[in-house]
Length: 578
Ligand code: GCU
Image (cartoon, rainbow, N blue to C red; front, side, top):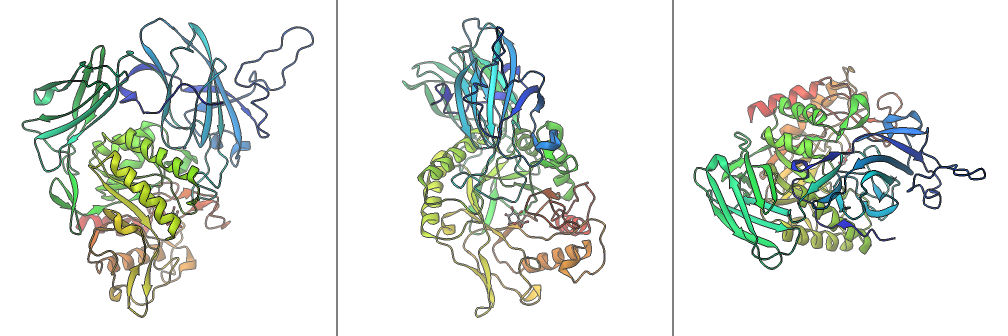
């Protein structure tokens, strides 16, 4: 069945729209053998008459909170990989006039959405939003919403069969029923025109291909109001001269209330304006070189063993990065929820955001390439108005090979066609120390096309030191900015001593490894930033050591309980002096 109502473009500013939240307690059925379709779980069947019976019933069954992963909500679901049906009733009015958009901020990993028994959309990709226009399906009064959610790992998926984070499943982000005028702002992208400090570019598209409609952009704080008229496809593309524009930067994260009006639609977003670029081996923000004092983290609350999903969760994660002394964050390894992105923007943190094209991807599969394009479009369409995002990253630790090089080159070209205002990057783990040359080198057929190259390198952990850190030289893409996008090692909080022994899992070893790596990084001529792996210890089925890990990857500078390890102080000192 094709979903007839899926909107292929993401609606502009969903959180700024009128509508109702469909968060809360949903009914659920664990459908391990995937019988739900032929048992018609997309209808709320109840027995009728003397001979009828219903086995698959929501009545009196499992309840799950939305948003939230199912894993942490029921001990029987902690390891569950498979299908779970979610369902709920809600009241609505179907009065004529506005369009009703059913919006999901994120479902892990794939789902089909049924409203009143009709398949209205399907989506794959745990970390990007999707929506459908359900105006014609919505009933006056009671409506029944059912979602078939599946989190099985698949070879052709993104990510594929294995990844070093917990395989959370569920409706892990917000669900909303939005109400917008039939003619509304469907897409909008506002940004500073490259090379200027007083000109904005605006690309705005209406949901209807109406010509000659006035679209007005206003920024009251700048006493600015400018109108454009749509072309035959309902689009406007124009320039707006502004006076006294304060640019966003990590030091001064200025945001403006920007209102776009088109006929009955009026929507206001918080938008900042800045330029980001590269000059040789430097990253420039508004023309000024910036060294990324970065940290990577997952979208997870480790002390509660669950996906992060609320504004409060976002504050905890981002505030921990600010306290460490960061001016940037790497949202590993996927687009994280909007609360995190928006709060980081308010706090002046530059953001490296990436799609979960992580290690073992099926690069020879055209279906997988289509999924990658969809992921990249949805990430960029959701966040292109978030000026804090400086980097779109399209892969993590993929291996050089003809099909991978072709796949990523094609994907990079597609990404650049969507957004030419930002830098494109990827993270690689194929920089090696070459004894004959006595330096680190990297041989990769794709990386040279990027604006910024990220290197994940675990010297002292996955790779022993070939010589002292101070003597090691690097010669890796020295014509462009290089970010150490991952380094570090595991340490169990509270274990001390044996600072020279990797298998001690001690804080002292981790701190010593951090000092040695930071010393080595001084020898990288094109170093433009570092991002230790990782802020908090995080959950992963990979991490099986019964005593030291217990399914936690212990590379955090903070433990899963938020305790600062000795390495935290090493990084905090390093960042305070940069
Ligand atoms: C890799 C990978 C991370 C992983 C880390 C590790 O570099 O990018 O996702 O968690 O190494 O091994 O801890």
